[in-house]
Length: 256
Image (cartoon, one colour):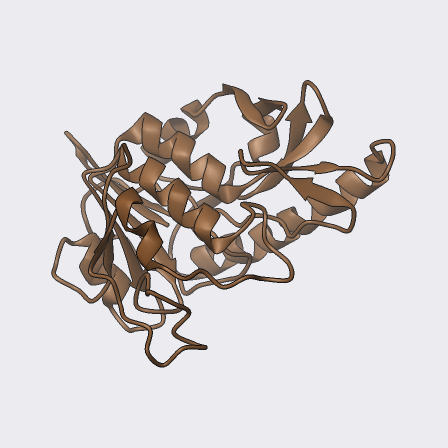
């Protein structure tokens, strides 16, 4: 996801990767200041259950610190690759691990401190965050998803635009990779979900499903001026959407 947040001194540009992976770095050109946050949720391990709040918990007996430590190290390794890519692209990227700024209580955010984002960005750095293993008052630990992090950032920064980046042109009536008759929806709101035939997946990610991601997008849209889903594989599509230009994609409207 990409946030564009207007400030008096310029623009903050927040870039968020919701799926575990690496995308090409996008140099921010919207103003004097930049704030970029990339979020990659860690893949759930065997024996975890997903909650509607975007957090995973261990269910196969007692919580195992060794497992949590390995998962946390894995997401940091991935984050390091993204940070290096951004540095190579000319951005002074620094990691902001969610476990150091956020805690949960039964999967819900109990406390969060976003001053690191403002502090680093005001100093010319580009904060990079990601889905992470975090403390949970009830469960011991949970995995906080990138989607949940981005909702918290949207609430705090009230972005001018929130851009979700996918490998298709937007939200379709069905999976366009499986159904040739799938149609792109120019706009979607909570009332339109009945028009979408979501594919069942054998394994879901931290947010539970694609439908779960779309519902979280409605929440994010409630705190943003505009919210879009666009294809990140099309050259300049993300850049143009961030600049407010008309692009192929799906506009996500606010939830109730």
